Image (cartoon, rainbow, N blue to C red; front, side, top):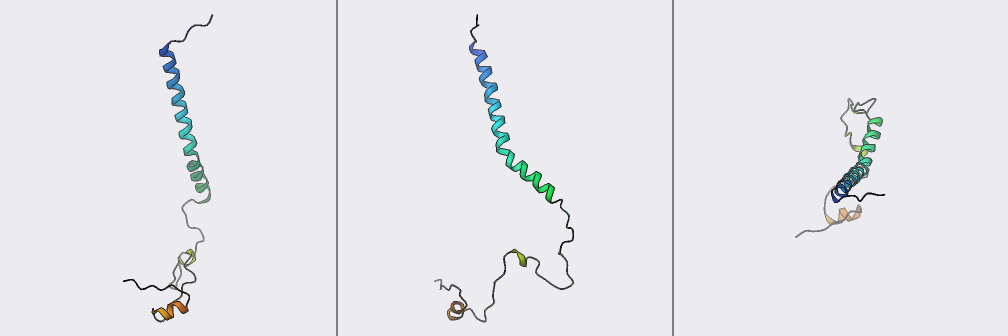
Length: 92
């Protein structure tokens, strides 16, 4: 015959199952960041090898970060700015 499971036993089983669910959800939520760190460590070890970070001539080394197409204007009046394709607004 099957023995009736006591309330205390059910509470222990519920506690164990809840703990396992929390552990599994924690692992699943942390897995993308763990995998990203593994991939980054395989690609980059912190050393600059054959990098173009020094030059005998003065240079802006961050020029390749999206600062292209910036132009200088002889004056900042509305006509000159609009002729260059810029937006001009007088703030009051």
